[in-house]
Image (cartoon, rainbow, N blue to C red):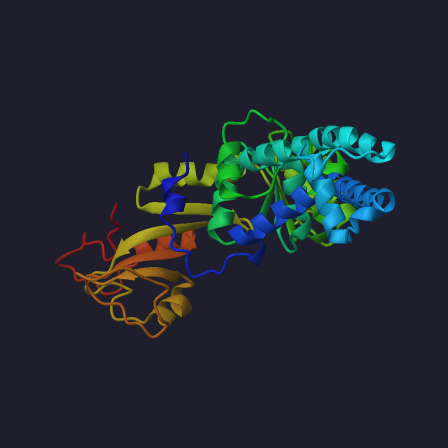
Length: 373
């Protein structure tokens, strides 16, 4: 199932990648059909032309034009004699051979074509290869577990073209990729041929989301060899190894899930007003909800002033009785009753929480920026 939080993201303003449209996918499928049937079509054309030449050569009394002679041959292919049985031995043989050729080449080809249209998965690999070859500046996603699945839908919501590589053909999430119409390559991405099929040479980034650290590293090096400019985002379970890989192999992003999730788990336990957190450049950065109270350090100040005085960003402002507004303008003045979503280091926000520059002695316990859940 899709993550409902991703479904609710308001990302409709971003244009979709031009190679992800349904019309383009159908055009790629037609290319696969042409590649699959071009030899048979060539045989049919040669058979019809050869039969027409024989009719014109051995039945001159008929004075057949080339189009009419081709029609005679075409009729024979489907077992419909165009005229009385000829006296010429060559044409007599033609009357017996052509229906057999038609049965073997044409009717079998028509049946194969009908099955191909009905069940496109029979030629899924070829179709996906053609689509991937048409992509440029796309994202390759390797590994389609829960992390890969959510990454895929977020990328698609962002309008990115994605090529998925998954080793397990029985993966429960693969049907969602097929319904979306994105190219799906089933196989081990450690085979360089699979990265070539995913058109890694033209990709802008590769996301390695498998649960095998060494496999992720091997695929990253292969992708970098194919495309030295490709951006590599790699999942690793050992953060120490992730840091060494990041530094030693110039991998843009090597992250462990524990390193990403640990700050969020800990800060959720420490303070229920913190909605998100991460470690950035050795600092614990959090996003937290606050109320603005009269007399508090933020009351009456502009968003720009808060940033300048406290190095705290105001991500969202909800005025009393109003609608939330993301990224309020720098000159927006904060007033009593505003509900804010602020972002900064935990140390600074903790200092801000305990700042009471305008408190009166009559109300010493009043929290000027009481956090809400």
